[in-house]
Length: 162
Image (cartoon, rainbow, N blue to C red; front, side, top):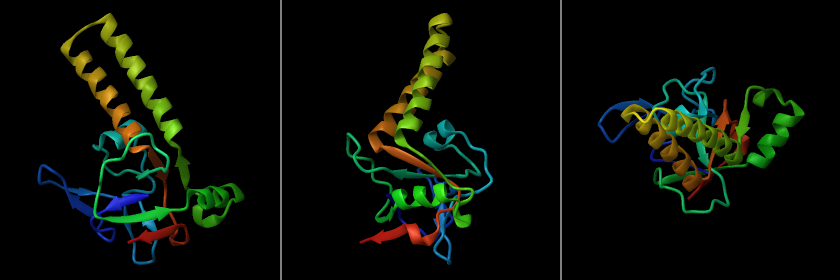
């Protein structure tokens, strides 16, 4: 699922009052990331500082903890059918990829391990902050059972939930 307060808007105002770009549903019903050709890392997307991201954050079912609420409106994305369509090579999802919670958590765990080694070798304030940020990123993605989708998601895979 994905939550939002206005799926049709390509921007939102963050907690600091800044207008930021976000994934949105176009008039044709396609859920479009900020930049389908972007090259944002998983860590940058999870951390929330990503600009011009090709990734859309979603919450996968079956998470161990209740996810954070990200808006009053919810859509459900049929990732099973989306993955089948990707596997078949359907042209409307040629540049779409699902990054599972397990893949995200594995990558972020490696970031924690790297930051811990760096801190253990040089316990500076900067290395401590890097380690704490890496731990927080992993904790948040586990909490939300975050699943990332790279590229556009056609309307046929999206269902609005009231």
